[in-house]
Length: 234
Image (cartoon, one colour):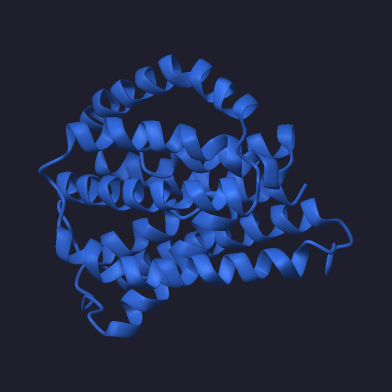
């Protein structure tokens, strides 16, 4: 549902899977599910993307990938939290809270605020998005802020996000498999079993977003983002 319209809803799955399977393992379980959902989203919104924003973000997102891989070596020993899994949960939570913070900041600026156009603005959100999506598939709120800041229409917003995340998520697959080793035949069988639910969710997202008001849409995004982040610190 998050991939086809209810942006932010997917963040609730991040802490739930982290609690059930462990934070690091959960990223490998969730990623193929996200890839399947990305395909559904791109199929529906395939002509709605604003490619100039995707091209600007991608190099910085890859920089965020690198930072995430370096961070993995830092927390693998259990520092600074004593338990590696706790470190991943904390990092995921911090990424989500960072996204929530900038979303609130964007709302505070108001509709008449000047749209940020400096290169560092794209760089900041690209690196944050690449880092958070590699660490815990938690870049949704961060990318939402960037796309809202450039004032894309709703359909262009969803289409641009769909294409960006499909590219990013498919690039992550070999890294998760060969570097972090958290994708296996067993997890892929689990993903296959979830495919009917993913397809149903994609359809529900398209239907639901057509009937929800803009005000309620924002409330849902803020609420789900906050709840998902707080769950990781429990």
